[in-house]
Image 1: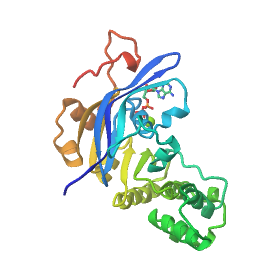
Image 2: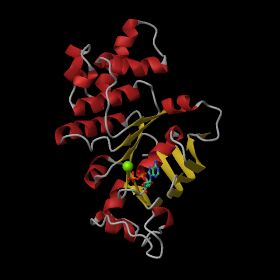
Image 3: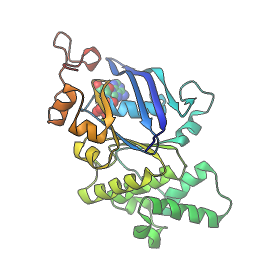
Image 4: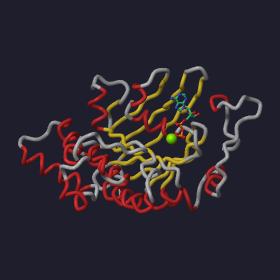
Length: 276
Ligand SMILES: Nc1ncnc2c1ncn2[C@@H]1O[C@H](COP(=O)(O)OP(=O)(O)O)[C@@H](O)[C@H]1O
Ligand SMILES: [Mg+2]
């Protein structure tokens, strides 16, 4: 199977420059394949969420962040572009860890995304689009008889799929998912996982997960981040069965302790990986 690259990071660095300077990403270059599910894994605090947010410039909503390098969506630069950021974020959607329904009906939660995209001519067409996105996230059968009830009354797992439907309704090319199953019960998590697997037929999905089991179950490619650097990027089978780096082996074997260089203070900004 041939795979095309959908999204590429080029020597991407992100530093938080608040009271304490934290170099969260250090010159990261990654190719994310189109129509694949890529999992970003690594110990807590190693820059996974920072990487995900920097892919569609979500960092710009907070002060004190310095970014260098670039991200390319296809052959277009994400950082050096005249394209307005909201337009860019339509093409690269973001689904956060904690799902939140808008204070609207189930129907309007999804219609909101369609209206943002602006691509419908009539109420009938809007109805059909809302149904199609709810179908895509495997939620339609559960809600078709109560579309006018508040989205917030659904279960957490259903709300997470509702949020996915809202994101898809904007018609993105890439979907960024940050630990989207970690707040869910196991059965809801399973249905969201199945949904993500279905969606990669049409979308490029980049998912941060704290669960190696989840990465093994549903990812095609795995990126292992450690102290803000990419240690290994490989297809899922090679990554888990025949990893190239010692540090990867240790992580897979359950060593998730982050080792900083002892000559420095405990700030990740000053740290170097104990082993590469
Ligand atoms: N808004 C922020 N301001 C300052 N430091 C931050 C901020 N967000 C994250 N960090 C720091 O950046 C590093 C990477 O964080 P993060 O990307 O959230 O890691 P992960 O998602 O892998 O747990 C951590 O040291 C974290 O404390
Ligand atoms: Mg995180």
